[in-house]
Length: 52
Image (cartoon, rainbow, N blue to C red; front, top):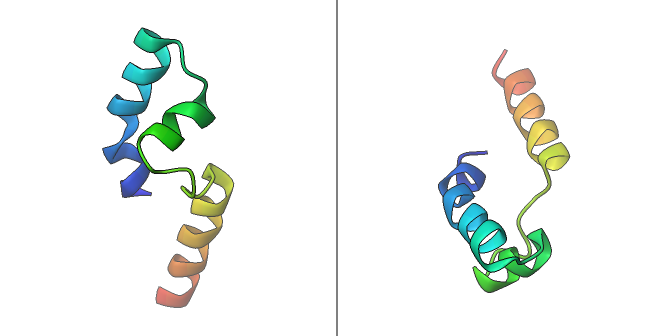
């Protein structure tokens, strides 16, 4: 999940100041393969489950 938050400011700048869509901003940053929030939650939950 950390990776998404590292790029959040850059995504916001591209989207708000340049009027890009989320997909366009992700592509511009080379992050089009970035996992969705749902995928990140599932991954985190499975890591917690295996640690317990």
